[in-house]
Image (cartoon, rainbow, N blue to C red; front, side, top):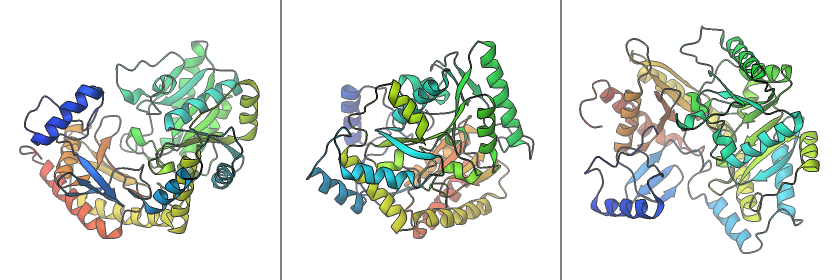
Length: 441
């Protein structure tokens, strides 16, 4: 995993944290990974800040789950009140889950008009793929080559980002994501459409027809590809040309992350057959959804029994409702658009003379900085250095992309304008230091 802690390097943690890590490994196992060369022990969060065990504040420019801020008061009060009243599942008639479903689906373009709730993005993607396979009578799935869509057995099979030991079955075809640095200029949409056609043909040669093409609407795990606008329309067109469904993965780009639009696919003037939602939906409480066309859900519900005990539980719906209230009442989509453009311009300005930075790109409060070597090959070492240098300056970001060479800057949407100076100063210092990479960050 990029940016992960290496437990074989001694002396990185305090004595107290070494003991906590030993307890963690003993009780939870080493499969759980920690971020950063020097992990952080957090005890509290507020807004866009996290606080460690010594009381130091860290500026959170990475976590999109607390979309309306860590320890959001409105969310806390809503969940507390609901837990004191009722917390049951969707097999009983309750008002709030219906009201929320109405509010949520009203944010989508026609013909997406119904929602099914689950607990995690992985569950939502899993369900969407099952619905697509049932609706089409096919099994083939097309995803991008470094996609991450979840951790269930099914979704891991369409998540090549999980690594070389994660087996991708014959029913899944991988295509290179659009690449604004390496693709011929102006040909991104047409080239991606051709790749989809080639993948569909490859599946057909194996006797497999395509059920769905599932794409993260901003290619979050493929290094954040924001252009060209209209690209996803070509995805929808190719899906329908091959008799397949187009599923938009909105787990990362959704809920205003990309700016004025609620959903990343809206930037491309297209509507998918289904959209999957997750991470920020409950501001940290487990809730996710598949939003789609009524006829798809009706057919699936008629032929397949589906129920999720905690999907759409009253407490999670209370959290999700409060998130919508915050996003709307505080005009956070507008804030995401405006502040995102300001940050994008500022980062481009401070990196404009760095030949090792191929591109700075973004949409809303989702920014990427791509590092390359002198021969234009990806430079993941420098990206990792900057991430850890930022951590030492108590600013949290991450890295991703096909080659792990792209900085991932994705703060909560409540990120205050007053914090941008600290973010930009830390980023500038870290990038300058990374040019020589003298010693540890």
